[in-house]
Length: 137
Image (cartoon, rainbow, N blue to C red; front, side, top):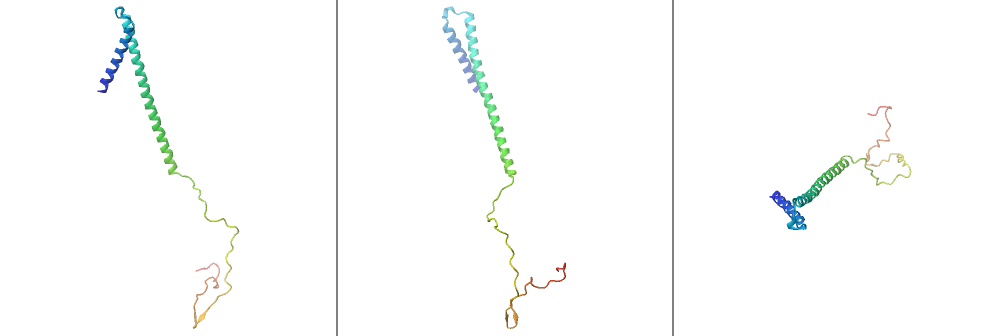
C-alpha cells in the first residue's frame, strides 16, 4: 500500500514538473526537444528528492548505530566500575592516639577477705608463681 502511494506521488511530481515546463513554452510551438527537456528536468527533480531521502535514511541509521555503540560502551564501563571498585578509603571514627598508652601497673598484693574461714575471691592467676620456663601447661 505504501509503495503504491509513493509511486503515485512520484508520478504526480513528474507530471506537474513536465506540465510546468511545457506551459512555459507556448502550446502550439512545442517540439520534441521541449518535451525531452521537461522530462529530464522532472526526473532530475525526482532523483534529487530520492537522494536527499536516502541520505537522511542512511545518516539516521548510522546515528542510531553510533548511539547504540555508545550506550553499550557506557554500560560496559559501568559494569567494570561495579565489578572492580578498587580500593575504598575509609576514615576512622576514632581520634589519633596522642601518646603511647602504657599498660596498667600490676596489683601490689592479694587482697583477701575472710569471712567465716572462707576465701571469697579466687587466687589471681597472674600473681601465682610460674613453673619452669618453657612449660606453660
